[in-house]
Length: 620
Image 1 (cartoon, helix red, strand yellow):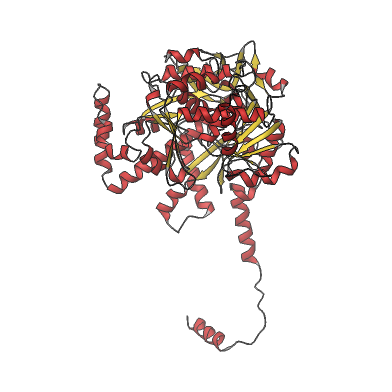
Image 2 (spheres, rainbow, N blue to C red):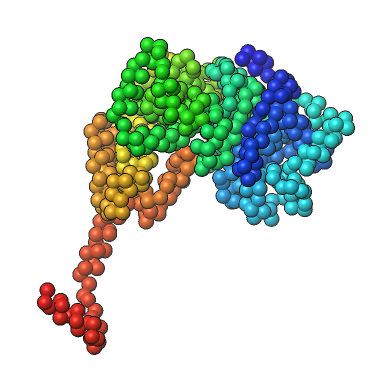
């Protein structure tokens, strides 16, 4: 879509692209009671954006101010983002999954002067109001009427639209500096505290065009929005790209409605993370198992895959019943945010789904590289997208024989810097290049392979580098293990060397299916898991062997894109929540000690029932 190359700012999407598609449906969304769908056209979205922007400028005096938005995915969220970024001030998307104290922290760090929120977040916002500025503006997306607590979103838009109809064009004609700081996004922080990423219209427009070069025909499609909107992966690659291309966005009501939404909205594609794809595969395999035709389906799948390699692809027709569970039209699965197991791709593609994988960061708006409709390369994240240059910096690599280095990126998609953090900005932006902190290499075809985060690398005393992600991929395939986190652990304060440790959670569904209510003891589970890990160890060179195991009793702490927050996990020193060799030995000692305790028999007269029991005992 060459016309997207000429987008000067996001405002061009509203004033040029929206006019082209004015009578098309931009959003499909269920009402608050989950009963009826709303079909909102492009012309209606444009009117709402201009109405909200006008009211914010004229009545709320928010020009040039930072304005936060928080809530579940909705067209109102999109309208807020676009209205603020396209003429009011700086938009600050926040994660609705954050607890109150973190929302407060980010509102204070971002210098927000207003917050637009959904009614589901009302309690959180109410609980922190006394710690926010007295002149803070509160706008509730779902409130029916404005009151002293908050303005009603729809009501102020109506007033703004009336101003526009009366000839007020101050907001509509507001010029946009495409290189100015307009969007403040906080990173999800898997290895450190969240940083505030400053983006411009230029950054996002560059990424929109890059997306169009990968999937040029997607303006004719409908997508289902599942991932949280505050994340730039979902907002840029889905909402911004699709509305620029003239597509339709169906909004998922929540994960518990996912199957229903698939069948009703019938999307052509979705953006997902590996955890969602894994769930899809589990549901498919469970359904196949229930039919009792696993071997037959496996044989058919093998034959169909063979035909597809010679240009005869019948998989969508053969597995039409599986396709129907996803609405019948789902052709493409975009996967990012974390590595996806190539075996899982092969499994899912065997049922007729096509995968596109990408790599990116919040700091790059986000897309850096991706596979394409013409070139899939399982196990890689493809080639640099249009307008982006990627290099591998080997300067810090002590292993002369290794081609793995830090991934560095240059392009119009690279951020302006970190908000109020000049030191952190200088650390990653050097001579026009963004140093990602990710490690990788190019394969023989020029595709990028990401091996992991530099901060996660385990370095042994003899200088060997171990990439946790490689080991985690192997551990996660074990039936007993749900998820894993591999890290370097010093077993004593005096130790100079690190031991490769694995912290895992168990697959509760697998255990329930195999053992029912008779779940093995902690010591037995520990031994079972370690026996499986030993099999993984035999597949690797000795220095990579996992020698320390921790079984976590509850779920891992995660970001909203389902990535494990490593720093939060490693800061958690609550040993009561972990099954380790030490905890098992400690438990054995406690039980042994209890067995040795003398029995304190209270002197008392036996009643009749006691006498009968005593007689029966002597008989036995």
